[in-house]
Length: 319
Image 1 (cartoon, rainbow, N blue to C red):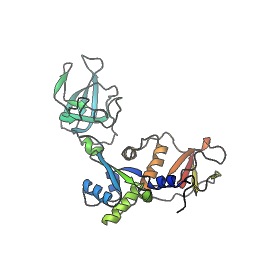
Image 2: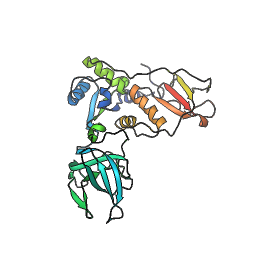
Image 3: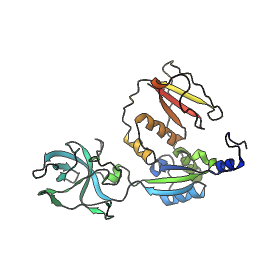
Image 4: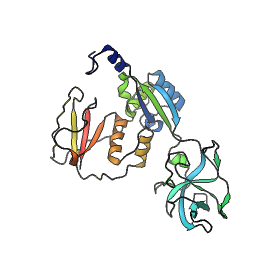
């Protein structure tokens, strides 16, 4: 075996070959590609026994109950408090609920999580679960609570109510709508299992171990429609054996990343940034192929920045 460049000493080489890597992914995402007839615990045991050591399995959200998708129908100023609003809310219960809300972003027409009377929310700083009761706030009856993502312990965002997409079905459990009963798997990989540094790679392993059909993500070759070229010089062939890319024009760099993609990225330990960055990261996590999107207007000459990573590179330049 040839020592990698820069690892000339035996000690450094031993450290290199013994180093471990970690892969985090959503169990739901994995099961879209390989869905064996076994529970989460049995699946974790199978992966560990096959050499993909499962370091951790954790829920994507803490336990809470009786929180549903709701639609705010009307918003009026609270008669006795300047910073409170009185909302008429459809939560799919068959009756319109009267709910007092202090969120600054509440408005008619928005869809938000609603904790119904009797709901049990995640514990606060005191460690005690919070139960929603029928009560009055400054003299006005409140028949539930409109929730922020922070109150459900889904994020640290406390800027206001958690706004849901317009197509969210009123009355549906928020746990079902956001797939909050999903689990995050973290596996420890040795250097010889780099093929499992992607959800597809792990799914391929599960398929081989269980005989479950492998459902590879569909892809379709897209023919080039322009003759634009950008010469590229690879300055370290030992670290980047092949570099390929394509110029893409007419992109809306401010486009919004779809919620389903952001959800999978977050459950894989990635923070959503922007549509182009998120798509690049998503492709890498799904298929194991690293990629990078450059701004063509900021590329000068034929040497792209930070070009070598130790992997083959497939890149797009957009404008």
